Amino acid sequence: MEPITWIVLALGLLVGGGAGAGITAKLVKNNEPTVVIDNSAATVQAETAQALSDLDLIEPLCVAEYVSENGDGLCRELFCWAQTNSTTGEANGVACEAISNLNNTQTILAVCEIGTATYEDCLDAFRERK
Image (cartoon, rainbow, N blue to C red):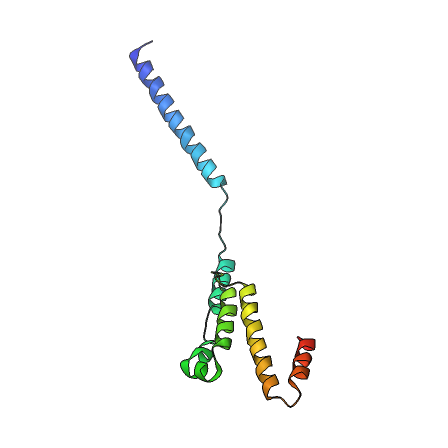
């Protein structure tokens, strides 16, 4: 074989191989599905978590004036319940129920001390309903 034949053969293989590889790559790339990521659920979840962790409802009950007049029980309880709804999950329902139970018990004892019924009858009435 003559040298020109070898050159033509080599160029033909290079051009043909390159063209085949290019066409194959183009076809494979066009067949890949386009992935569209929908983040609307994550956005709604983030907005909901932000709204639930907003402490604007609790602030008036935690100011020094309110706490000095009424105690800090309601502030503690509401703050605890707000933290159970947050994404951090810092507080759990058991802890909040314990605070709530303590607040309710203190209220019952205070009401029974100033009530018109006897102290034991008052406690029995609350115990039946509690």
